[in-house]
Picture 1 (cartoon, rainbow, N blue to C red):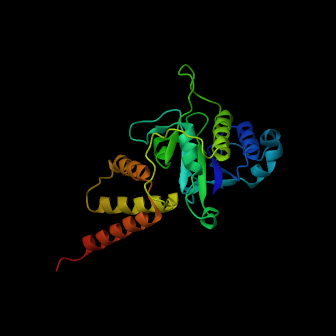
Picture 2: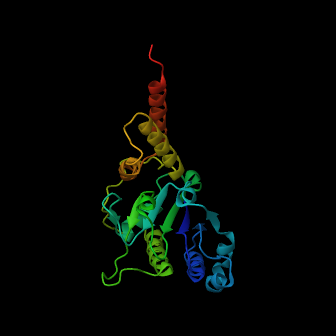
Picture 3: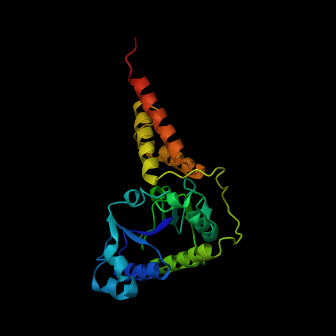
Amino acid sequence: MSLAVVLVEPAGPLNVGSVARLCANFAIEQLRLVAPRCDHLGPEARQMAVHGEALLEQATLYPDLAAAIADCQRVVATSGRIETESLPLSEPGPALRWLCQDTSSQETSNNRMAALVFGREDRGLSNAELLQAGRVVRLATSEAYASLNLSHAVAICLHELQACRTQPHRVVASPAPAATNDGELCNRGALEAALADAEALLLEVGFLYPHTAAARMAKLRALLQRAQVQEPEVALLRGMVRQLRWAAQRETP
């Protein structure tokens, strides 16, 4: 499985350069930037990247988080806060072990993607963005000053990830139950497309209303994330939605 580090709207070129260096340190294959608010190819970023400069030059830009992780089966996001509508918090060890988990054949594994997502320096990730992750991590810091520098947070997570890679049999307690089967998790893009279809139908039939749709769909998204939905299940969901739309739109005989 290939792994991408995703930075959402990074504002500091020094941070971006430092993260590129960390990606080189820990053999991360891809750096993805969502709507960066700085010049990631400028002299400050290059100065900090050192031997990670190639990752800066190859970094892929995306307009939003959904696009950046659309091809990923497993996504872990980091947060300094979380509300009750979102996914439960996980310790870094179990979450990153889940991120690296691979139950498929080697051939299939080589085509799979995972992502480790970090939010904005000033306000982190929104709740809607957190709901796009299968696990949400909060690093243990002092309550007196909980906010970490972006590159420092990346360093801690990548160090823990490396431990998961090099100590595959280390026992850690997981706060969330493991999946009960060995099927492949669906791509984030496929799940988001299925949810968009479902939302459109539920608006059409009056189950959702425009002013409450976002909140109710957030609950559904969280439910599906906890269930670790697989590709055949997403196909089943989309088939159900399409058939229900067809039935709802049929003319009454």
